[in-house]
Image (cartoon, rainbow, N blue to C red):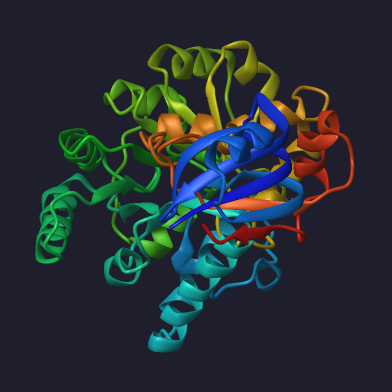
Length: 397
Ligand SMILES: [Zn+2]
């Protein structure tokens, strides 16, 4: 059945903000977007739903871990990043409140959707939990293994798990350069390339990571000693970005989460490879107090997207809260329109999902988000990235 959503203001795409706009829908699919008065004259008796405020596309969370939704960042007060990882890993090794935990992760995802997230890049180790979380995610089945001699085993086991699910097309994620061996990284990347998927990797998240990859020393050693016991890593003086690039991991389908600790050469490399960066400022502020060098990333025109990371390092996985934090962190460098672009069209295009997500346009399904707003059209996008959090509602399409 057809219906028209009438928005006083519609943010069709990050650059296209229109007034008195009609969105024609049939069975959840957008058939047309245009001037409301013309649409009604043309179509006649189609039911109209009025929205006194802004209608905008759902946002894309480019880096999160839904399986960690049972944890709260406040419970992980830490002295440094490695301390946080150890506390998190210890908590995860406690007996998992199985059905309760699974339910909480699904509920957390639903809450994020209700608050305006349309799609998730969801990184996780629990295959069964994550693959059941729906189609509006790019699940990255994350693998770990710093020792080369386990690469084949870890990879084969993952392929078996994926095969048993009945789909060969599940993507894998690389945890980080300090926890995944060169051979395992290459296998993951090869697998994802073969199914046409983006590959996610935590990269250059902290100075501890940089020190370890360059020299083999520092706090990551404590982490590996405790978690792995016997391990081997051969540093060759490279930064994390240059190191993974030397292994052929970086290209235009590699989505690098965090990228806080970058030197000029790293930024140039990310630009040359056309890799994307998923910025998670609230998590970065919590874990290390540092954030990515955004000015340099912008100067090199690197594709930026925005992620919340998990509730183990961030207050919530509400993307409107995250875009607000991003804008306040970098407001001298980016406009509200830029921020909306990172959270919608940039992410949709980079992930290969622009046929379904990232804008309100013909052929897409939504979700469409309503935000009550009584201001002027030119202030609408700024309102979305500053004051919309907590006010958003999903429109039934
Ligand atoms: Zn993460």
